[in-house]
Length: 239
Image (cartoon, rainbow, N blue to C red; front, side, top):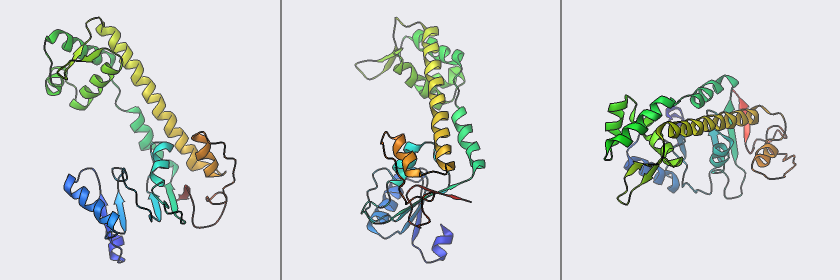
């Protein structure tokens, strides 16, 4: 951001760690034109509908084509030429693949939480469960969400979660572990699709639209693989 400001460009930064009031002010400044460029994490973008965004540059590869397509869709909403560039190196895939493999929930830990909740007799909060099981609060919340998804927990009339009496704790843990494994496989597949998009030598628009179920055959004559024109849609630049 500093380099942009040194060139006389009005730039600001945005990330989830900022206070809500700061985030709101930065977004308002961008929407109103007081800020020309936002250097941001993917925390920025939802709800942003600015017609004259001329470019979206991705410094790093996204976790899926869904995310990428949504994010580049912020550019060129006024129908005028806009640029979407992904700066890609295959070495950068390591962090994404690592992230897709983290967060594994051991079946025994899931069962431990289920047994704890079933024997407690009254609702326990996240901190209590974390303390008794040795898991982080984030993992506790993840397990509770999964238990509810598989029907092992239900919400009472007062909005509290409690174990389903008929559900065996071991069975509940098995169901949750299976769901978790499926989610991990899906994450790995989405990352693989994103990598394939970054590395293809054929029309990128064809690849993107086919992914979303469109029968578009191309070529678009606008992406970097089809054309040398500077204004590209969903392009890749090697760095």
